[in-house]
Image (cartoon, rainbow, N blue to C red):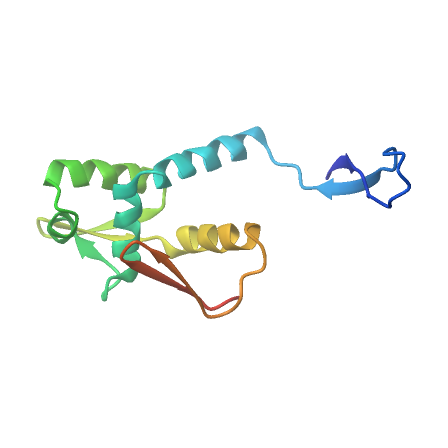
Length: 140
């Protein structure tokens, strides 16, 4: 654990009081990987793809269905899907000539829970709205 000095603000006015706060050490590689994931999630189309996949009735969608929902061409959507697949946020399944995509819940679900936890205590059964998406958080 890395230590970080912080003022405890006990009010004696000298500003020299320090408290040792333990912060977890994070490797440079982990920071780079997390930054890459956030770059991927900062794109509106990729974020929409993730939510369409996460909220789909069957848990997966065909590329054509994603194109229709997004109003984008197949090459554009496939480009976004390839970036998400390489990052391990989604996975694909081939059935004949068709590719179906689904969210890798063990990765993306953990990421969402981590984001909620980092934002503070999240009440159970809270709904998060992202434009026309609603994400329900029921707590762990």
